[in-house]
Length: 568
Ligand code: PPS
Image (tube, rainbow, N blue to C red; front, top):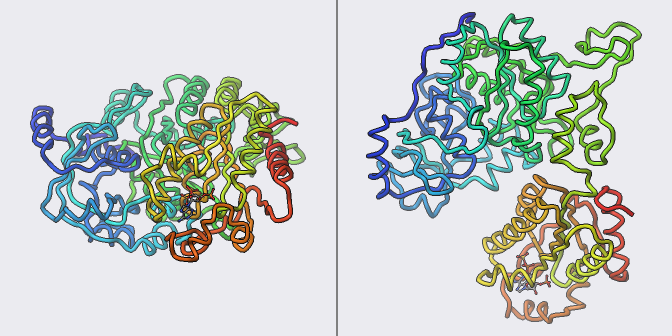
């Protein structure tokens, strides 16, 4: 295990000439438009990052991976890499079919020769792979609410790599990294996996890890998909570039990994180890709560803080990579330097800033001390995360028809326009249905499309620094959550539940729709013949019964002030 085997590993690409020919032939095949996550998975399948996988898992491999973290042939593999598709697409596919896999612009990247098609037991997958069938886990939510219901498996013939326009020089395939290590004569390489900006503590710990292992260092950040709400990878890579200068020259390199993380804690750590082995590294830093997804729906951590280290240790030999424990580094004021938390000299003052505290300081434009981070990193973070009062945000009203959403939303819009500073757009339920969704009805499928359209427009407004006010019924929790995730990538999402009771809405019946719904003349009417799932933890809940509109809108304004989104 001590010296790396840096010989090339198998890739799934065909030769350049064959690729040209295949691409033309594949134009006649039935095609599947890959999702962003599938593109990440496909890239690592094709370039050997997921070696020994030869394609998307077959049903037998899938079952073995879910149950035992192994492929059917016994090789260690902890993560199901599956091609999930819609029921409609799956209808026309049978084992023996070849499918052209296309990126989001329609470019054919690979051919999948289907050997297996099955409907997975997603609850079982969630329990075994992620530890709980709990939608608070981002990958479990993805599994149930984003991934298609049918899985296709089979070998891949790689035609071309997914195209990246950003940071091209920093992206390496496993074989490119292996060749680089060979060329420089690096014998031991310790990799650091990260999805966050690097601050001084990270720089210290990675530097120490490399020194202790007497190894060179590979900073290997994930730029595919990370946890919803993370700092975007463009900003992070600019921050990493700045930190790279702080390491002793020629001991350290950085490469970007287009991995779609699952935040699966212990299983994910083992998976990360195997992926790094494929990239030619010998050592891997595993931290406290590695790839942790945060709290479950009962407010408890999904995994114990050292579960990932324990599982990695158990399989270390098979992974073929030595685990280096992550040392939690803290700043010791009197010594003006970083120490591992368990080695702090007695009587000294320890300083630390948590991730939550850092986000608060960025949000509120407060000081971030030099002992904590590098000025270049802070400048970069401030550039992309201006104080909240200057960022875009979305106020998303949800509630029954006739609950008063539109009226409050209108009043709020006027009040915000009176304050000035940011453009305000109102996406009212009825207005959206007229201009964006006129072809849609009120089935679950159509309501979901409608809400996701609203979410998309609101996320663009938020991204560009504006205020979006949405006021649809939005009856389903999962869809509201999907919209929240879209928006929180760019700014705050303020969910306001207009909690006027069904009795009150029906008594008001401003549009006469409840009467028609009771008479069965309008089908699938929310609250009467169609469900409304109440938000469990909205940012604000208002009830309009006996309260005037002005007061309700004022409550929202106070909430926005308390969140730092507007200044009094
Ligand atoms: S949804 O579920 O969020 O897509 O609904 P939304 O786009 O907000 O549209 C709701 C408005 O459409 C009218 N309407 C109905 N509502 C609920 N169920 C059924 N079947 C239905 N048919 C028509 C109704 O006027 C809603 O407007 P609001 O402003 O909510 O009263």
